[in-house]
Length: 229
Image (cartoon, rainbow, N blue to C red; front, side, top):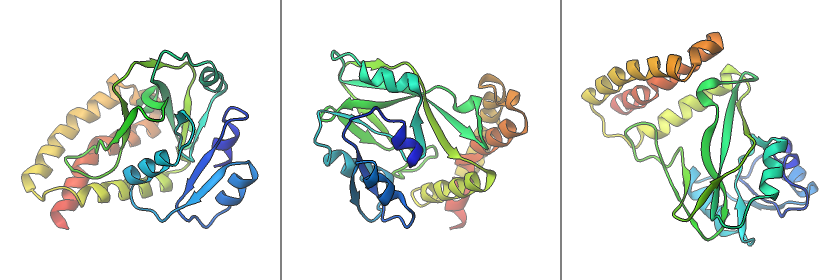
């Protein structure tokens, strides 16, 4: 949270939605001048829709606690042209302190006119789980220079915990099927090859191979969890 807040452009209004955390998030956020709302956790989509409904400014920049703007993106936000209703930013995710090629330059709508967007879930497996959500805008959308830095996985244990949580959430919304497991495994082989070579995970060494393997098998793991209950 500190890194996210200190990376923002100076002087902007900040709203922090906190899921009744037990660390120092609330104290730090209020100390940084943010408006803080505490609310019991529901799910990812509902939480973001709730937060957007609380925004009182014409423009919204949505970032998570484990993200931060680099200096170029911070400046680009301040200079964003008015003819657009939304802007895509490029996000790179880190794993064990290293930016990963398979997660480099992901295009995401994160800056937008508050009343011009909708939010939808995009589960990675064949489920209806409210995860991997994305903002959508039907109006003109531009692109901003710079990078959104995503420090989601400081170590392997954190990655494994999130992987287990997300696949379990998806499993709750998948119809159990042994054929679904087999199909997901089969497609996982092709996806692993694509991640390793087309997306460059092979060049990241053991870290890249590890992430490519687990990413490719994500739908199969969720399908298997649904099958075994």
